[in-house]
Image (cartoon, helix red, strand yellow):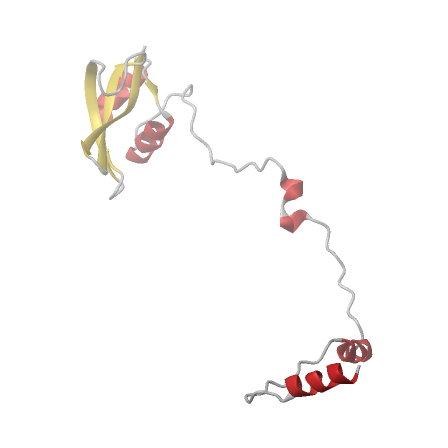
Length: 147
């Protein structure tokens, strides 16, 4: 069975593709090619298709790949009824219930301002920072002598 699919050409990091007609069981790069019916540049989105040649192979039963179907349709090739057109891809989320946006909303209880003022004195106040050496060690020594 024949297949119409993309065959990568071009240098490393800059691919370009040929629309190749070849045996479906063969590898796209090493298999014997029956014919080339066009090319596609993904960087400029430019596609050149030989409409008559592509139509001839489609009429004889060549199976186009999903990307080639899109390119042939854009070029104006009349596709047979048995060709499956690739639809829009739909994203499926495996565990949608675990998403943050689908979690039940937590009601936030706001505390009145009076309670917030009462809670503030309970917190320890910071002592002022002294720059000079304190005279406390001398006082501690005198307390020890008294005992």
